[in-house]
Figure 1 (cartoon, rainbow, N blue to C red):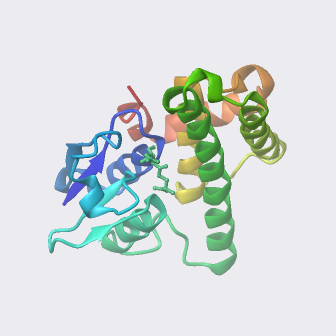
Figure 2 (tube, rainbow, N blue to C red):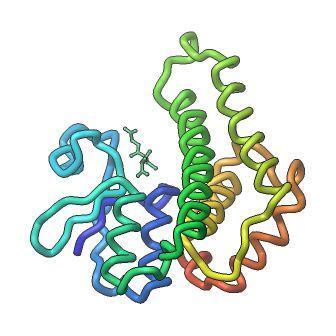
Length: 199
Ligand SMILES: N[C@@H](CCC(=O)N[C@@H](CS)C(=O)NCC(=O)O)C(=O)O
């Protein structure tokens, strides 16, 4: 299989982390991708021009990160990172949605600075995105996710915190110190976390 991604992408990291955790990473070739280059083939594989995209051995393209994680879980036998039990599944998928939302808001802050000319930047809109991140982190700090099993929920939370460490949209270590121990415990349990750090 081939994975279109880029080293800083937190959504791409979800896939690399899960693939390593599931023992599938050796069967994936990572293709360096630029979403900003109009000639990059990613736009043929995903009309939205977003990464990650997984290209299966039969040529089928799979996106977005949630669907790719579903695919990897299926390939690994099912029930490995997406619980089979309905209540546990709902909790893990909802947690993933929250952490994905934190990453979406974090990326929009970066794009505001990177894509928009300075005179068109709108600070209240950036602050609105920061508020989403802060509310999400507060909810996570109030009820840190279980680490009994690595699943799509807690691995996405770890990727979101890692992205904030990398780009520093908010200083979560200062504002949400209750999550520091949580991330340390996740890292200790999941060596693939450090191996997939953004750069
Ligand atoms: N919902 C998507 C979000 C993916 C996403 O936002 N990827 C970013 C890079 S981390 C991207 O491709 N941005 C380029 C663009 O929005 O044009 C997923 O879960 O895969």
